[in-house]
Length: 426
Image 1: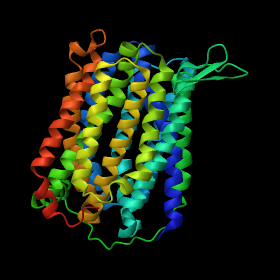
Image 2: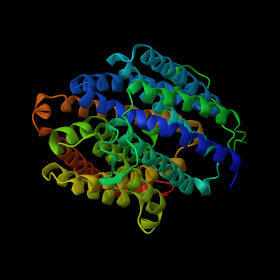
Image 3: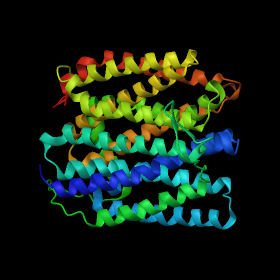
């Protein structure tokens, strides 16, 4: 494998940053649902942030295709680390954070995600050989979700602390010789900001040799974006599969940030440790998917594999809608982890094999833009009063089930067309 040391450093830095970011992104939605008791404020803020990412995501793709991906990592982590560190300092000084500052951290992290992961995948494609694409995409999924398990476990502790020396994680009670006090949100942000700065050091140590000699497009932003759109218009099978395979990812993001905390609080009537533990089960599922997905579906083509994963998660969402049982809740999150990660691995590997490296950032920006519209539509529906009444948030899972079944119908309709036009299924 080429550029081994660069890949190891890249993965290590991704683990460190993913840990603290994961805790913050678990803590913030729960903060607004349970501590601040302002779930609608968070829903409306999330809608606005998602709308802004529409423009940022498009621009981020052009940056990824034009500038050094290593330098992009360093600059984005420096900006996030400084701003979140200052917000944390303000919290320590006042022993409190205003809602808009907590939202600012959430928005900043979302904006970072929108350039970090496309940049990560583009960088991996740039420094690895084609034969290693599938394996490395699986490794990225495994290491990212292993980090999320740890983040979910720590978040479960930090959000609610312990009572009578009893720690509850993932439905399991553990007796400790001491009590742990819940952390304030600004204390969590301090840990987050420190990891950004640690990651900068690791990125600065990365040395690599690019395996591609790509033409760098130096035209205007509009021209460079247009080239990404033109490529997908000329390759409709890539566009079609890319859009449909992103549906589960769109629903999962909304589920994690909006549906899940309200579902735990209003339907299950559980505390923060159960909410954070859902991330653990989700991550376990994603890790299993990272290790096994390519092996399980090695004798099936990519489109059929995605169809089967969509059907599996649809069943789980249906059960979560109507059954107030903790084991179904945890099992459902396990399945969401398996299927979302599995589809992401299959989709990314497909795009690596079918899209040139000098266009990967912009084509991902196109898919990301469409994905943002999907999320905005979902968030808009969830802002309706109906979902805020009693336990009606559970019907959001049925909405996801219907959306995925519709996606299955579309994939079945265009099944032969996608296969006939693709240069590689895996």
